[in-house]
Image (cartoon, rainbow, N blue to C red):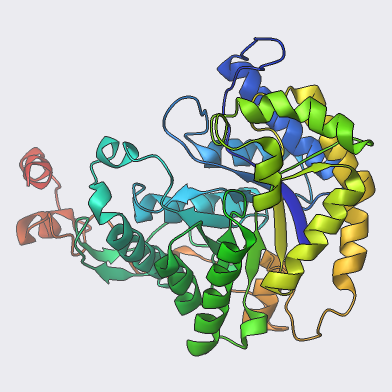
Length: 407
């Protein structure tokens, strides 16, 4: 089982001091937090994607590539990558590149996001959010598994003879988690492809998360990927800890009350009672987290949001210390008890390569392995004259160049 942290990258005023960090400060603090996660023994760091204030992370792959260069064991992920407003071709290329840069230490969580205006910003219609998510992932799935793709759909221009580069490391695509809080169709999409399903598990009661994961497990088995118990499940969550429980409550209360996501609503006491948010001692966090298994079954990944609502970096690093020193070692031991032998571990690049190749040498992409030619062979925007002019030995003159780009 993997344990880690995720960030939504909000830039929020600290309600106890009235100070708001700059974008630069917040970005550098997040990098420090990611490196510290590895130092204290956590497994995963996941980064959100947003294109609007008060969030800074508009380019997760750039940030994660930097983190990859500063770490050696940390699994890098997203929380989430917007499958609706990103071009699937660009996702395929960016995350394959990140695979190579990180030596395979990357997976990604796909989602529709929670900011309505992002759709028109990227030329899409929010009313088509679910069809976009389904169609775009169908294309992304193929781009990672087929050297040459011919494709047409509703929401983007067609592809003919297209090869996404670079090819996935070892010809094994990054593992995909489909993230959703409330949409059953996304749980079914994850099950259809045999991918992972990640329930954020912060805002809704346990009964809702239980129903979503039960649906995913049932559909995973229905689609023939294994038993329901073998489905790949991840959970989000948020905790705040101090040695003394009441100290944790007193310190966290002003941050909770003013949080941009859930502030100015239910009281801290009501929210912690009705949702998985846990504010208290490390032992309370251990007990609450172990209880998740009672209603979702054995699962593979637990991520916590640790830096939301204006918490200063010093406090966040102290929280990571408590996670690494007092909470996660106990959770690893307890979650391993009575875990059925047929429940899979969290997927990693090494395990996916082993599952595909066994003891054989993985395929490495070479120029000869890529059969597509994205410039001259079969593009719907070129005509025969341009293709002929582009062949070896032909003079690819100014007139042909103009014709290609005008068309």
